[in-house]
Amino acid sequence: MSENRVTIQQKKAVAERAKGCCEYCRSQVSFAIQPFSVEHIIPKSQGGQTTLDNLALSCQGCNNHKYNKTVGSDIVSGNIVSLYHPRQQQWSDHFAWNDNFNLVIGLSPTGRITVETLQLNRDGVVNLRRILYAMGEHPPAESNE
Image (cartoon, rainbow, N blue to C red):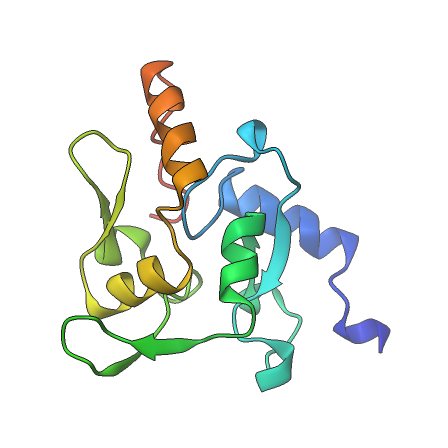
């Protein structure tokens, strides 16, 4: 069973690769009130492996909302689409910031379903973005471009 656990080395590598940001909502570790998690993009319950290619840094809110989900119904087309996969896709292909950098906008079916499913624009996150933007600390530099 220990081979299914994320190792300390993997946690370090994932955190460094993400440059201190949630790979979904872009919240920053340095301003978080809860610890971030290293999560399985494809959940172990669906056959996901504990490898660097299947691990992402996630804030607690995104991790809780994602849980074991990998797909959802696009709010525009109604089609079933995959959630954003940080190891296989570029954030900027699926998301953008609104004009004042408070909201994450889904640009594609994958982006839209991820914004909705993970609730990337939760009230607390939006409020924190407003404060950090006013302080010149938001948005963070892109971590997987």
